[in-house]
Picture 1 (spheres, helix red, strand yellow):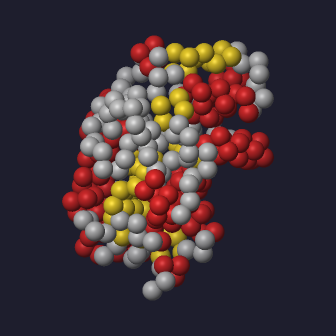
Picture 2 (cartoon, helix red, strand yellow):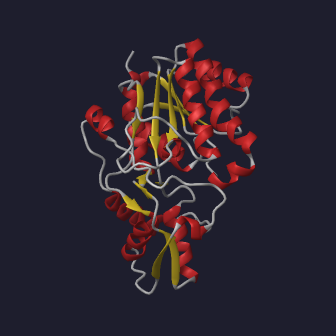
Length: 297
């Protein structure tokens, strides 16, 4: 049966990525069931089974997660319950029903100690609870669905439908003339609509295994912040570089977690656009629609 006639399910549909994903799928003509925490609890096997039996999807895309990196350090049990046991429940239920599962993961499964972009088969070595819980979730998915799964790692996600780094910098710039941002962590900013498109493509072709998806171009949080301020026309605001140690956050962060997206590009047939182009689109849409608010990260 043509996938466009099948029912797909997005879990975590009200989040930043989930909102853009549901919109992309429906705009592509895919019948999409959009569920969030009030509809299904991925930490409860019975809840998962009931949702899958009720809607009978051919594809499930899981974007639900506990993403509060610092909060995970204090709420270890919750982190593993959502980020590890939740995906396991989904994978086990999917394996019993012949469902293809797409599961979103993170660059934080790596230790960030290298100097080359991480490939999909690089060994995982998380240094914090968030990364460790997400890594365990990946392991469970692979064990339960050896052939019928797709794990997509992304990083530094920003989008108009949720709190994110871009909005935090803009909020900070409203009340401060100087912003101090870490300059010793490297990654690739990822725009939610672009990641949503990639998830849709990988789901359609049943891209099996693990893929990395992020916008092109690596940067630091400091240079990302400078680009935000410059493109938003906030010339009065000065961005100063600091170290991760100076920031003093509870959870450790990988220093170099840049993702190599060549495997995705080879399958999809295109290279994701540069993050600066995505940032400019974000700022344009934000100016037209307004944006979310949140504290400086």
